[in-house]
Amino acid sequence: MKISILIPVYNVKKWLDRCLDSLEAQTWKDWEAVLVNDGSTDASLEIAQRRAAQDARIHVFSYPNRGISVTRNRLLDHARGDAFLFVDSDDWIEPETLEKLVRVMEGKRCDIVQCGYQMDFGPVPFLRPVAGNGIHTREEALQMLVNNKGINNYPWGKLFRRHTFSNVRFPENVKGFEDTRTIFRTFLNASRIGTIPDRFVHYVQHPGSLTNCMSLATVYDMRRAYEYQENYLKKVLPHQHFDFNRNYYNTDMVIIYTLILFSHRKENPRFDPASIDWSKLTLSPVLHGAYLAWLQIACVKMGWDIRKVLDETQWPVNADDSQKAASSSREKTAKPAAKRNRVR
Image 1 (cartoon, helix red, strand yellow):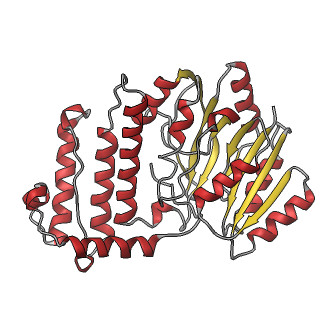
Image 2 (tube, rainbow, N blue to C red; image 1 turned 45 degrees about the vertical axis):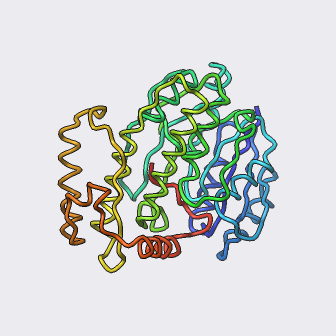
Image 3 (cartoon, helix red, strand yellow; image 1 turned 90 degrees about the horizontal axis):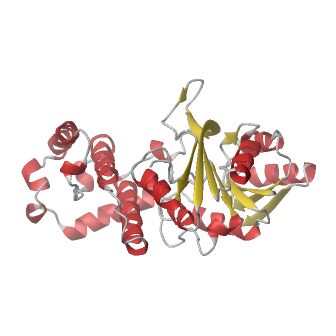
C-alpha cells in the first residue's frame, strides 16, 4: 500500500525540517510526501524544494495564497497513493506511525484508522484522552465523534483509504473549523473505522496556533460548524440520534472564556447562548452551575444584566454595531493557511 502524506505549508520554516525528518524516519517506506506551499513569505518553499531535491518521494507544488481549505483540496488533487495521511507542517510523527496504521487498516479491513496524539507545549506534553483499540461501524464512529469519545474532527492522525474522500472536499467559502465540516463526511463513505491508542502525532503548540489567538468570531464559527455537522447528519442518517448538547455547552464555555479574557466593552461584544438541553448532560447541575458562574463574571466585566443575557427577547444590542464588531474581529484574526483548526 502506497501512502500519500499530505502536508500544507505556510510560513513554517522553523518546523518544516523536523516534520520531514520524521517522515524519512518511517519504518514503512512506500510513501510519497505531497507538499503544497500556500504563498509562504518566509523560507518554507526553499526548504521544501531543498528536501525534494534530496528525496525523490517528496513532491512540492506552490501557489499564491488561498487559505487552508484550498490548500488541502490541492493536496488531495495531487495525491497518487492508495491511502492518505494528513500531517501539519509544524507537527511531526513517530517512526512507526505509517507501519502500524497500515497494518491495522489491512489486517482489520478498515477504511479509516485513527491513532492518538499528544500536545507539545514544551518539554512536558499534554495528554488528552484517546480511543482504545477498536473496530467500529460508521454509525458507532460518528457517535463517538459527536460525543467526544476518543474520535475527533482533525484530518491529521488518521489514515484514509482514497475512496473515503470521494465527493468530499474542504469548504472553500468559510473561514474557521473547516475540519468539523469535512472529516465526518469521510466516515459516511466508510464501512469500518479503526482506532488505536498509540500517541504517534506530536501536535505542536506555538503562538500561531488557534488556542493562542481566540476571538468571538472564531468561536461562533466553531458553533456554526457543529450546527452544520448536526444538520447534515440528521439529513443523511434520519434514524440515528446524535446528541450535540455537550458540543454546544463546550462552545458556549469557550465563548464566555473569550469574553472574560480577550473582549472589551468598547468592541460591543455579544453573547448568544446556544439552545442546550441540560437534562441530557452528565453532571448537569455541576456543569450548569459552572456555566452560570463564568457567565456572571463576563457580565460583570461587560456591564450586562445576566437575566437579559439569558433572555434573547430582551437582549439590548444594536444589530448594526454588533455586525461591525464581528467583522472587525474577523479581519484581525484571519490568517491564511495557518493552524486555524486547533480547538475541538
